[in-house]
Length: 424
Ligand code: GDP
Image (cartoon, rainbow, N blue to C red; front, side):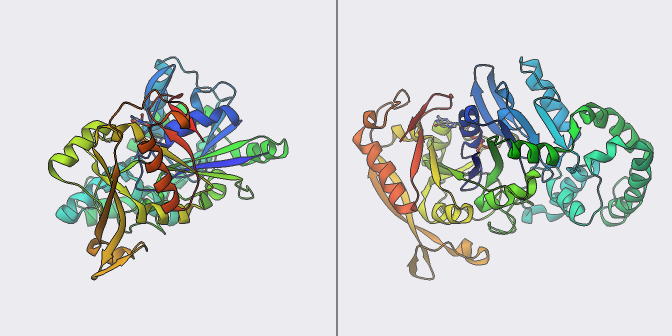
């Protein structure tokens, strides 16, 4: 049996979806273990191009069982929309290939409202939330003020539980934000419409995973976002509200005893970041515009232009340490082909001193990038499939990054398609 996690090393959007889609051929089960529908994994394959938000990226592979673990924020409404879109494009989704943990907590309609209300209250101090309700959802989960998906299977108990939560939540909506309260009828209508849709997929996924483990099945754990957005280890408070790090995979998946044999950390050949918060290597103006265009850096969920810059060695090295990555997938190398020189943020300067250490969040905004550069290759590399066929300058860049980050770059991605990959 071999277990593997595919995780983001930076701020998210590193290309995890394309990596999961690629390697699922070797796995029997793919589990999403944290996060919700607030980010997007883009997958391009024989069925078309998809922006997945909550569905595991193994959903396109025949014979692969996909699981939404207990650690995810389960928004039945947006999940059902996503499932319908994917099914409309010819992909079968059945209780055989998608299983939803009965212990996954439900993101309820007011979580999205509260997200928007709080961002509006913060005004120019906002966190840059995608307003999908993720932060209010996780707060409520840890306050034990939401319900688990499995409760949908016991309606006689569900309504009582929901009524108690409704009463409490309306206090916040009305008294703190002056917003419209919810009624039990609103909630019942929502649960009946969307809860019913996902009910056939809900089961004891912990039992399924334990059985799969006992049978020696190969399990792949799929993360959302990246190390620097981790609630505990990231750039707090500009993090997400869950733990994208691989160490959380066993807990959030439903298989707390799982051992990870391989951790593939996904790193983009340059940097991108959505939302607010310090982004030391950020570019502005024309050079940022050029890189954003070349890389198509617009949010998969929101369409927002992403902030971009050169690769950040300091942040990447730290991100790898948080993940315990055993292998790196370096994606979007092809995007840099237009550059005469490939810029690299090699170190930071903090308080007049150069450093290799990733600063504590409170002082991170004071850090300045210390730049270096390597020669570019100035030719199209998107058709290259063998390491030795890459131009020497491209190989030099990959080898430089590998040395600096201290982890083997096993995969080099040169295009979004499944086969646009060089395996070293
Ligand atoms: P994820 O959330 O980490 O899966 O990343 P996203 O899907 O948000 O962003 C990655 C984007 O880059 C998607 O549009 C992918 O199709 C695309 N992509 C992934 N790898 C490559 C690559 O090597 N080259 C190019 N040109 N695009 C890529």
